[in-house]
Length: 640
Image (cartoon, rainbow, N blue to C red; front, side, top):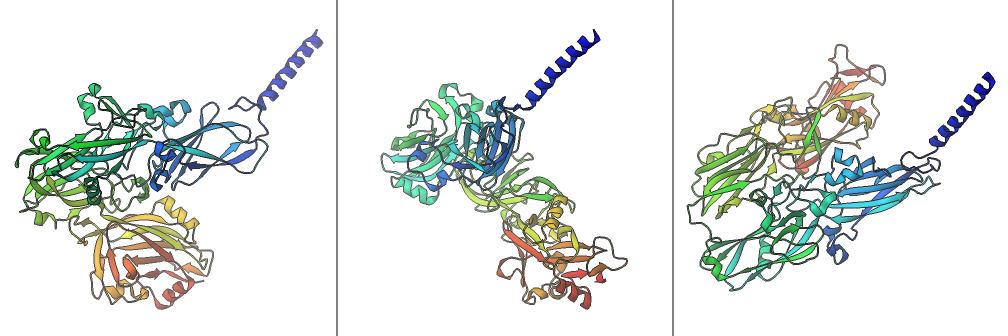
C-alpha cells in the first residue's frame, strides 16, 4: 500500500515538474515561446510621415524637423517596458528580447516629457495631458506624435535592429489673408490669441485645452506683405472646442482666435476677432464651429468694409476710457536662453531655465513718465490692470522677483535696483530672475500679447581638465561675489553688494571628477555684473586680484572658484601640515565676456551662454609653490 501511494505521489511530482519547466520556457509578456531570450538593440528614428496634408505636399524645412523626442515602449500586454528621451531629435535605443512583440509611442518636439502614471499602460495614454510651451513661434519644432504597433523583434539575431516612427503633427496650418474691400485700411497688428497651451496628444480628436497662451504675432514685414495681398501662415495647436452654440462663458477664454487691428484713412481704429474653426473634412473655415483639429491645411479670410468704422463693436473706445489689460509671462519665449538646461540651485535641481514662479507688471505713461498702475501674481499666471485707452505706456515686467515698491515716475523706475529673493545658500529660490521693458499703445482691452522678458543671468558651462594626471579631486565649484541685486530696466547692471552665487551639486562634482579630460561641463547661473574693462590686465597671468586691486574694488567682481583636495598618499604633491581640509589648491577666475574675457574684460552680461574651462597643470603648481601663493592659484601643498 505504501509503495502504491509513493508511486502516485512520484507521478504527480513528475507531472508538476514538467508543467513548471514548460512555464519557464514561455514569454510571460507575449504568451509565446521565447526564442532563447537574445537581447537585441533596437534603434528608433523618426520621419515626417503622412500625418498632415502639407507634409504629403510641399513641406517647408521647419515643418519636417524633429528637435526632441520622448519615446515609450510597451510589451504585448500594453505594459510600459521602456522610456527614452532624445534632446536633439536624434535616435533612441531600447534593448529588447528577440522574438517578442512591442508597440512604440513618441512625443515629438515637446522637450523631455517626464514619466507619469498615464504612461504606465498603453490603454491609459489617452488621458495624458502635455504642456505646449512654444505656442508663439514653435522654435523647438511643431508638436507631433508618432506610433508603431506590433513590432516583432527579429528572432535569432543579436545585431542591432532599426525602426522608423512616422510623425503626425498636432497643429493645423492656416493660410490667413485680408481683403480690404474699400481700400481704406492699414494694418496695425495681427496676432493669434488664446492658442491652446496644452493638449492630450494621444487623443487628438477630442483634445480641449485647459489653458491659453499668446500665439504668433506678425512682424512689420509680414504685415506689409498681408496688406499687399499676400498670405500669412499660422500654426494653431489642436483645440476641439465644438460648435459655437455650445460654448459656455468659461470656455470662451479658451477659444483660439486671430485678432486684427487696423486703422482707416481718417484715423478710426477698428478691431476684428476672427475665430478659425474647421472639421476633419473641411479645409475652409466653418462659421459655426470652433474646432481646430490636428493635421489640417486650412484657409481663413477677413474682409474689411468701410461700414465697419460705424460699428461700435469694432471701433476703439474713446480716449480716456478705462480698459482692463492683461499679460501672461512667456514660458519659453524668454530669449535667448531657450535650452532646457537645469541648474544646480543649492545642490538640487529646482527646475529649468524657463520656470515662471511670480509675475509682476507696472505701467508708466510714456509721455511724462507718470506711474499708472501695477499687478502681481505670486503663482506666475496672468496679471491684469486697468489703464486708459488712447495712450502709450511703458510696461516694466518682472518675473521670479516678488513685488517691488515702484517709484512714482518712470525715470527713477528705470534706475531702481531689485534685490535677489535668495541668499548665499540659494540665490534663485523662485527661479531665474527675468525682466523686460517695452512701450505699447493701448487702444483696446484684453491681452497685451508678447511683452518679452530677458533673463537677468548668464549661464556658464564650467569644465575642468587635468592633462598631467595630478592626484587631486574637485571638492567644490562655486560662483563667488555674485551680484546681490540688479537694475533690470537699465542698460547695464553693476553690483553694489555681493553674495555667493550658484554652486555645483554633488552629482555635478561627481561628474566633473569622472571626466577630468574637460569633456563634461556643468551649468552655473550668474546675475549680470557689468564691471567694465581694465587695460592693466593685459595678459591672462595678469588677470588677478593683486593686479586689479590697484584700480578697482575687487570685492564687487564676480569670479568662479574651484577647490581641489590632493591625495595624501599618491603623487608628487601632498598637503601642507595643518592645511584646512578640502582647500589644498584653489583655482579662481574673474568672469568676463568677448574676445578679452581672459585679459582685460570683466563684464558679465545678462542672457548669455559662455564656457569656462579650468586646466590644472604640474607647471602651474610648481610656479605657485616656488613663488608663494597667488590670487589666481592658491596652493597649500609641498613636494613629497
